Image (cartoon, rainbow, N blue to C red; front, side, top):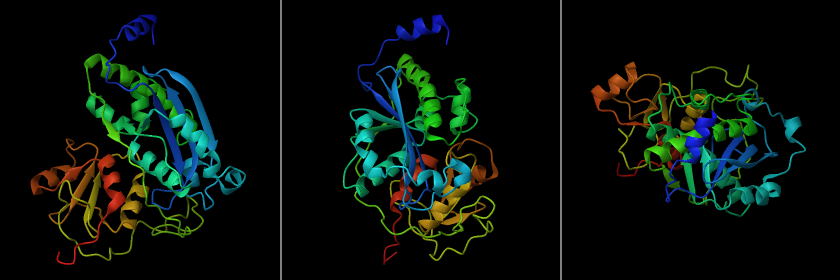
Length: 327
């Protein structure tokens, strides 16, 4: 940023309704399901204008297999001596307290954090969250996709260790600051959402899930892309404003911020049918770029198939319902 840019930034009239501080968060986890655990966490605390105040990072012993090591690089040996989540919960809470939680695909980070606090018989002191994917849409940033690396490249932020919580949080903090100032300059209302504590979680022992092998090695974690047939009948199309139902056929199109295979596996675990193509029987299309001219988005428009983005889909995965008995 140039000296002129700094002067222009300092002179930006600041909206009174904007939050007084932010906690930019990234967590790495053993996976995406309800019984998955946090294995590392980082927080960058920012002031009202997005300037960095301090940062914090910790490993967390998940007391289970670390999951996709080839993504986050954290092995069982590395995590063996790390503190348990209840041992870092107070310090984590101190850094979140009174601030808006900011994350890339924030619903995922919030759910993982909230479940860890629920297991520890506590709650995280967070009242609101802000998703940087949603903010980039509000600002109409010309991004090729919604990955963190694309947001970082747009603002000239250099990633050093992708999928390392501390570096991902740093990158996001550096990209969030100019986004925040652009929103303030243009009078954009921040896409803040309420954070409600979770009262459900799973303490069941971790077992290999559909599509995984126990070793979680990159060369062997998935024997093949073919999955078992969905055990539930297709209940029809998704109705906006209502929960997903087991057996719904879900198709994905375009880039996702969460690894596509992990996102598909989580859908399967929730009882959904992941479709590789889109037809009149497809219940829902998940895409972060509904205006793209892919075959799936074009078919969705012609068939009238409901379309939602990844963040909304991730939130709906929390509570996939059984088909009513009279359905």
